[in-house]
Amino acid sequence: MTDDLPFVIGYDVISQIAGHEILAHWHTVLEFFYIEEGEILFSCEGGSRLMQRGQGIIINSNVLHAYHKTEGQDCRYLVLNFHPSLLGEKENNVIEKRYIHPFIHGEKEFHELYLSAEHPSQKSMIQKMYEILEVWEKKEEGYELMIQSQLLQMWHLLYMTELRFLPDARQENIKMQCIQKAVRFIRENYTEKITLKEIAGHCNISETVCWRLFRSQLDQSPIEYVIKYRIQMSLELLGDPCLPITQVASRSGFDSHSYYSKVFKKVMGCTPQAYRKIIDKRT
Image (cartoon, rainbow, N blue to C red):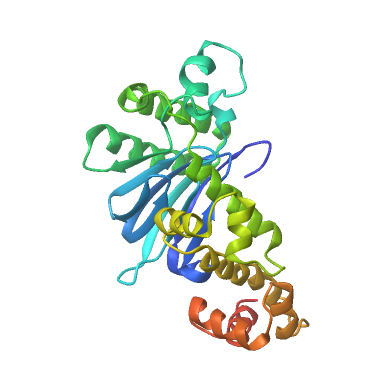
């Protein structure tokens, strides 16, 4: 994805992602996600849901979400990300004011929408993803225009079948604001010692409320999120063969090499040393 064309589409397999999960995050782009094979556990502002082959989800801009591999199956999925500007979000005209702004900027109750290939209109949206993928892969003359045109067609279909029936937004979602604030605090301070008390205090809520919010919305405790994020940040450091494991651990926020190795194996299924060897073989 580039500033010139804020768009990307492609396949991924959850077992090929480090840790077999994408930690809770949000972004300004819209995300269309469709499962081709297997299943995946998806967490969004509406809670967690097991999604299987033939199902998908549309995630709005700036909505917190995460997903991870289930114990039973792997998952191959097609994902499309694009910035609202490709719909004309920055244009000050009737199209932007009526059909885009209310849904992207929180005036309507639009966080995520689940899709099923068994639903006729939703099946058409899923099919449109594959048409866009074909244009993207061929990259023939004028492909950027075709992609924008097809995104607008997809948005029109979404508006006619789903968006226009959404109610006005309720009061600001305090719960999700707290979680986003907590996640931001963790990401900015993961190299330092972080306690549940500090996370809760940063959000001006009790430790109990903080713990329950993470469990209900992200299916993990605040400290579990801290540990997984530290592990994720350590993966890039392990790519440097000259950096001792002890320094990788300390730079990632772990107090000791032994504890880092222990939780790394629990999360990744192998030791840091073994993971480094895997990286070396790939390069």
